[in-house]
Image (cartoon, rainbow, N blue to C red; front, side, top):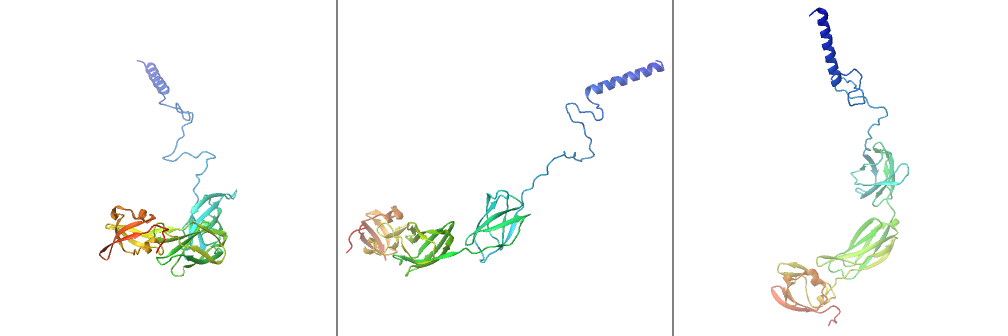
Length: 312
């Protein structure tokens, strides 16, 4: 083969290889799109990320926790909540329950900068504002105006303490009274206007409550409430393995007139073993009842008259 023929053969072989590589997509012109993609190939150096597209937004970070310093005249106020307002419309948008720690409160707002109203038991609502994770001013809490309600609970108080619960707006306040005078005194928020009062007592190991009564939240010393009285024959009982133990006797009731005493052991009621009975149900019975009791090791039979029966 002559030199000219050999050169022609080499050129022909090179053209054939080029055609195969072009058709199969093994070789691509610089800057030409990759097969099946409309984007040009962008060469990168090492592991560097491709540049961000124009107009892309930075990710929005959640608002910072806000810490506010408080000033209040009491050691441990009962913080209720913080009501957050939208900074544009001033409409309420969130309620944050709060717990004070020393002189500070912490909460997570909806907005980095905003304002809200702080509600704390026994204090007037306070307006607070914050920005960049901190309150803008020290919050001074002023005690809420109060009214003093006082009076007495009438009725039998020999068998324990009477307690009163006053529901004034969103606050619940309690006080108690001891025998023998039955007097009480309590301060309530004057802004409530009125309060609902419930009188309670313990009897037979259970709580008795009066119906709710309404009082006006102004200074007064003349309130008078009646002590709630038990149903049935005035017998307070609790269950033990041997039967039913007498816990309380309401004075002036059929149980008191029958001579029953606290700590008497009831072993039978109308001939039925007492261990098979439920104390709460028997306490509701209006009578008459025939009780077999054990007192100081002696077995006695006592008849309790029905409620409303004439007593000797």
